[in-house]
Amino acid sequence: MSLPPLVEPAAELTVDEIRRYSRHLIIPDVGVTGQKRLKNARVLCVGAGGLGSPALMYLAAAGVGTLGIVEFDTVDESNLQRQIIHGQSDIGKPKAESAAATVREINPLVNVVIHNTALDRDNVKEIFSQYDLIVDGTDNFATRYMVNDAAVLLGKPYVWGSIYRFDGQASVFWAEHGPCYRCLYPEPPPPGMVPSCAEGGVLGVLCASIGSIQVTEAIKLLTGIGEPLVGGLTVYDALEMSYRKIKVRKDPDCVLCGPNATLTDLMEDYDDFCGAVSVEAQEATLDATITARELKEWQDAGKDFFLVDVREPAEYEIVRIPGSTLIPKGDILNGEALANLPQDRQIVLHCKSGVRSAEALAAVKAAGFKDAVHLQGGVLSWIKQIDPSLPAY
Image 1: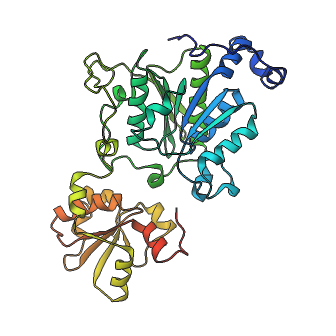
Image 2: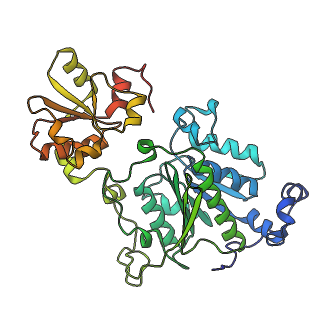
Image 3: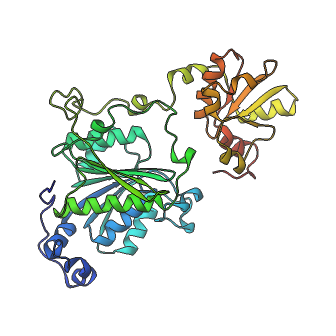
């Protein structure tokens, strides 16, 4: 459905702006008035990572007058495969500052506002209230639900995107005109069911594919052209090079935007709502967690134990802890691998960071291996504390 322009046009375009945006100005649907609306727009990008990189760069190039960047992380070498707004010389710098520098280089006419902070319950509404539109480039469920809830409570539209391996999704959520994120996903997935990009990986260029959709939708909303993705979900499969559009209806029972909404303010704890690990995993790890240094001491002392790496084969090829045996978490959770675990040796489980091994630990203990433990911080902790020469990923 068509919607009216989100912002009023600015008073005028300068000669420099007319030269810069001439290819927009000659599009009848955009024209001078549309470009003036972009100039007057205030857009906040949540995250300056995989999706935030192309979003910020193309929003800047398009002439959005004020771009806000909320990001607390620093640039890591593993980011550079997909987060193209950062470069080699930016490693170690705050992502918000690195992204802002690139935006200013692309378009010095854009006013960049840096929010070098973690978005949380205490600041999200105050930050969002300064902008017309939110572009969501987050990569975790807790922040996604918080972004949605704050946008609905403030009456703000926001453009959402999600990426994983070769697949991407994008939509526009605006409770005044259609569904919100909770209408599509009333509850977060069970802990451990959906791996993060850090665990499952993502094709770098997929960020550009979904990020460009987000920017396109933002421009349409700001200028009032075309039919935005309100009430629609675009699903992209890069391997098949296919796009599908799925209709998403407003949920009459939505706890946030439904007629009988029960959620009238932000939740107290979004991390608890989404749950990084299940209750069973939390209980299993009590008094059953060892550090990397303890594991090394056990190895040096010749202690008899069976070290199990529950990551995926591709991760095992990148780096491994000496003496470990690969048994993917899925094979443990479905029971296939349990019969192959030794009954006469203590089981020690590890993954990349400790989340997947905690889930596997719960299954192993439930199967009768009561003295099993897992490695706190996973292989990343081993690299940091024991062998920095190994590659982190």
